[in-house]
Amino acid sequence: MHISTDPSALNISLIHTFLSESSPWATGIPLETVQRSIAHSLCFGGYLDGQQIAFARVVTDKATFAYLMDVFVLPAFRGRGYSRQLMEAIQQHPDLQQLRRFILVSSTARGLYEKFGFKPPEKPETFMEINRPGMYLSG
Image (cartoon, rainbow, N blue to C red; front, side):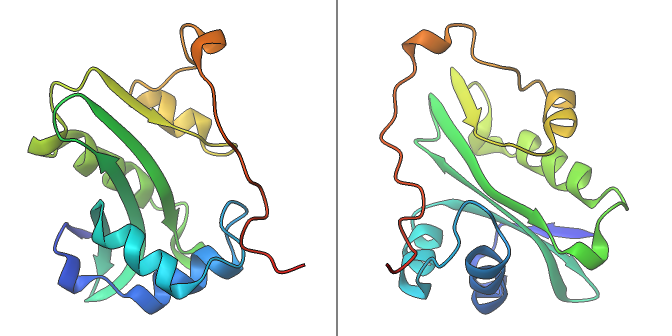
């Protein structure tokens, strides 16, 4: 798999379709929101034979903090080590070195993320959030 951070190579339609229809965290997300999130993030696309099969984005100040999110490999390509390759590329990216804090929120693939040094917060009582589940669902 070839991994690139070139925003012009991203298949926005594919990313939006996956996030809005297949992800448990962004169901119903509008295309315009996905476009804006990509424009303001460091994005990683995974490609096989020129076709995008994987994606991840990192929200970061490129100095002290990063938040890894929207990580996926299309279902037809899972189980082949592509998520590991994607994580290696993210961890090796020059803009993501020497960060004081690198976080993610995930209910799946915890074993994968642990291999890259992610663990539960040392002091979970210090973390706070505003969480709006189902925000993109009309109702």
